[in-house]
Length: 391
Image (cartoon, rainbow, N blue to C red; front, top):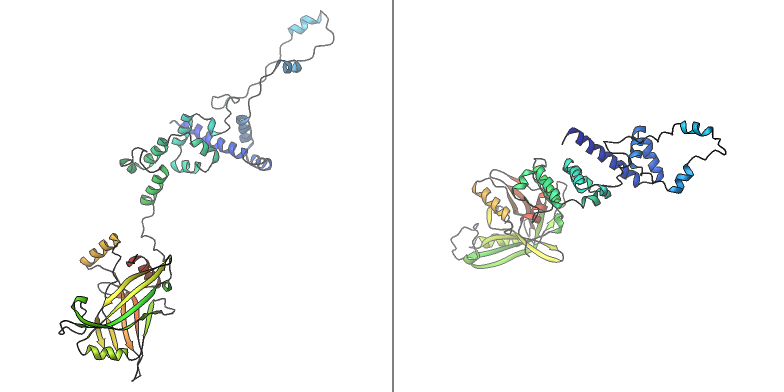
């Protein structure tokens, strides 16, 4: 396309926009818009939008003819004949080689399809997207072939042409454009951190403490064994936790344990019984109750009046293949960041009989060399997206 053709198309777009604006506003606004234009622009716009004058009828020609003088002598006839006829009115100059009277385009529908396609092809694809917001252009764009919009997207993004060469069976051009832009033209940075959609108090944590006697009584009292290796078992506590209110925003659930339970457990574990704990989360979604496993493990350390349970990772959602794939790789290369629930069971201090005790459950992130507390947001996201919930 030559520079002259490009200039013509640019001027046509500007003039069409001005004419469309003048057609959709009231007289007062039209006068305000006209006052903002330069005199030359007002004259050019008026010349381009003025309708051609209607042809004169015979009656109108007679009315416009000059009246004959009341009397005329024969001697005056030669003089009248010798007078020169009046010159015709000067025609308006042509614009871009086209007569002004013929250059009347009231809307884009008046343009032929090839001219409309040329304007769209010359425009940037973003301009073509903005054109859809204009009522006049929207109606005119319906005349375009779907292949034109498809070809404009492929011209802008050649990589798409390797798989969607034809519009048949391909997504709509607008969908192709937005998808490619989102994938390849967005800022290269870390993904935005998600925000939880439910608060932590929307989840209920339940704890069970049980004792069991293994088939092989020679095992350590700290070891955890599968159910098939248990000869006998009994539950010594089950209840729900209370979310502690604290200013540090580090989530912690507390389970108050009745008096005497700690002493009973301490006595039985010294006589071939083993101790382990289970933690389950529950929530309601659309009125349906769902459950998720957070912890099951034995004892890692037992000090005077304090029991620390095993550090076990929270089981990931088995239906999320991407999470399982990444989790397996992190374990294989020792580059893991495991979400865990740490349980600590401690007795009251300074009391010698019927001492109360409580279990604290804290959400942790464990790496190869460190363990840190989860934030309130991390704990909510872990429960919402990471764990596997029942149907």
